[in-house]
Amino acid sequence: MALTDMFLDADDVHPIDLVEHLAEHHAWEFDRVHDDRIAMAVEGQWRTYALTLAWSQADETLRLICTYEMEPPASRLPALFEALNAINDDSWGGTFTWWGDQKMMVYRYGLVLAGEQVASPEQIDTMIHTAVTCCERYYPALQLVTWANRSPEEALKIAIAETYGRA
Image 1: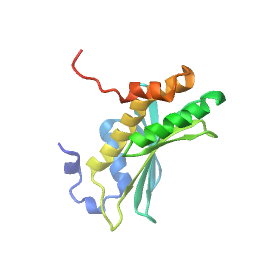
Image 2: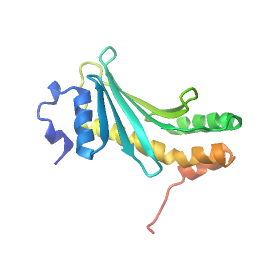
Image 3: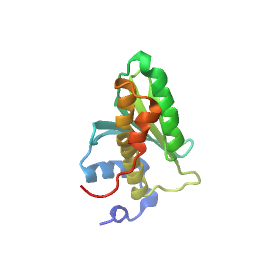
């Protein structure tokens, strides 16, 4: 069954209600923090990612942040920032940033639904999938930059390389 089939009259469904139903559908751990906010944990290959989606009625935007803890050595922060700039140049859907005070790597994305547009379950599912996929794609490169003293260029070749064939 398509995700949209679960919501016959989506015009009356709050975006965070859709996220909650998706979390239940995928069996993700979640907490409806507020009427306009939900937090959940999504398991990836490298780690579990913390996602928060929040609806802002003021600017009609569904905001997503996907975070994971990271404690890079201070001496590697310039290389980390260089890697993040290169990653963001390559990423069209969202952006990465480093929240130093919280020691968190963050992927952010906002879905603007101005003009009373309604997000479909598929759009929201794609947002979440894209966030986790991007974090998974660049996680090894960021680890190489921060812990293996690799240059951002060298580390990103690993993340950007496409795999062909079948094992």
